[in-house]
Image 1 (cartoon, helix red, strand yellow):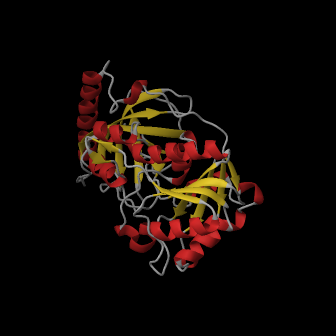
Image 2: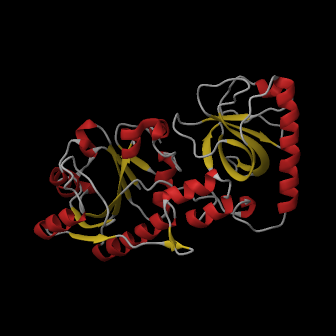
Image 3: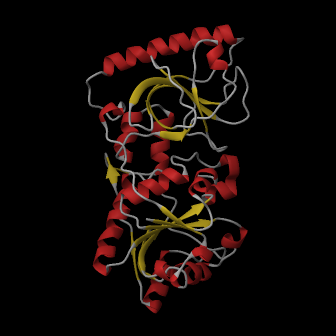
Amino acid sequence: MRVIRGLHNLKAAHRGCVATIGNFDGVHRGHQAILQQCREHAARWSVPLTVVVFEPQPREFFAGEQAPPRLTRLREKVRLLRDFGAEQVLVLPFNDALRSLTGREFIDQVLIDGLGVKHLVVGDDFRFGCDRRGDFALLAEVGLEQGFGVEHTRTFTVDDERVSSSRVRTLLASGNFSAAARLLGRAYSLHGRVVRDQQLGRTIGVPTANLPLMPQPLTLRGVFAVVAELEDGQRYPAVANVGFRPTVGSERPTLEVHLLDFNADLYGQRMTVFPCARLRGEVKFDGLEALKAQIERDQARARHYFAAMEGKQDYSLPLASAPLGRDTISYDSSSADDAVDTDNG
């Protein structure tokens, strides 16, 4: 699987493909249906399936902190796209140069000269180009002229409602992780590498694994009962705080995870965190003693939750769910793998 950063990194080997374009935030079941639709055409043409995404996402470029929070960082999005059949991901930097292209210039530079598309699958409400002419009708017109097919995506519904990233965000924000998992097709999770921090947790007897988050709007905020998965695949019940730690003060959002009945050095390890139940919102306490007392109450509530859920098969408690397969991902650019993790991903 290849990740191509920018049009300038496209090579002859990348041309000739079935393509789709979008944010694919969350890679939910609606996105998975689009990828299946593309795979059918790619198999017919015997060409690779290419997904075109933008970094930052267009709404992030225009709205900044007012943009909707992300469901997936770029690294995780790429992994999920690969798992659902994408063979190439073209990451286009969304900047002034890209936004200045007319609809026809975007088609010529990206789809024709860049990717040499054989077939394109996009939503019939897809809009692009500074001239506001870029739409499904223009794509179909140019496709007929240039010899590539264009079709709209199939709508995927759950409970008679279209699956969308915004619908998933709403469920996550309300703490309904089981319903969100039905739309995602998997348990929602957060990922990161454990770093050294202020280590204040140790001073009050509650050591935490700290995973810095991207400086973007948060999908979740508060204290949660979670399941933490370590690099070796072992999973542990835990309590996590997602936010800015108002009692001690923090300018950057952090995911703090306290593994229950666990004592080992986790620095440098990658960790996957599955939120299971929302315990409370973030609160600023008068001092560390008050914070410690509340953490003890949080731990008791989390233990009660896990005891009640033991033995139940439920998406919101993914103790028995299989982790995603890990395959080789190559990056056709000067950016190394870690750059994907740090560049708004």
